[in-house]
View 1 (cartoon, rainbow, N blue to C red):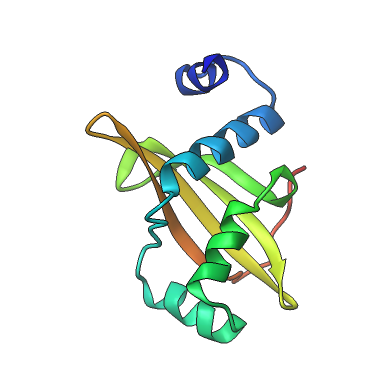
View 2 (view 1 turned 60 degrees about the vertical axis):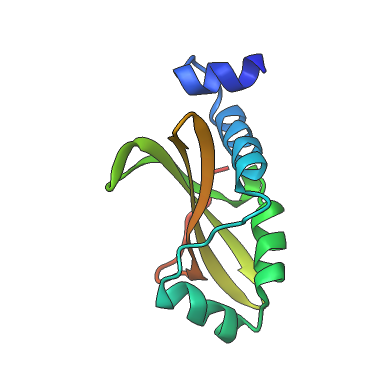
Length: 126
């Protein structure tokens, strides 16, 4: 799609368009595996929030521009990858959600790097 190509090559687009394109690209390449980095904080968050992995998946897939906090950011482990941060209110707590898309071996791969209670107040940008 033309819009995806513009996003990839960095053509000037509005911040909202860039976020929408990132979310669309992420949704497309995150499924069906829906990989979440298996860090203790991410696992513990499901218990503390009373969520199942399926509910976490639904929350991530329903993110919108209104949930945007910051990005694109560079991933320290893969500097060419872009990372976006979102925040979502769930069960009375603000959840910090960090997503990235990597381009590996000719394919886009989506990863949820973080999904846990925010450690500080998140400032939504839109």
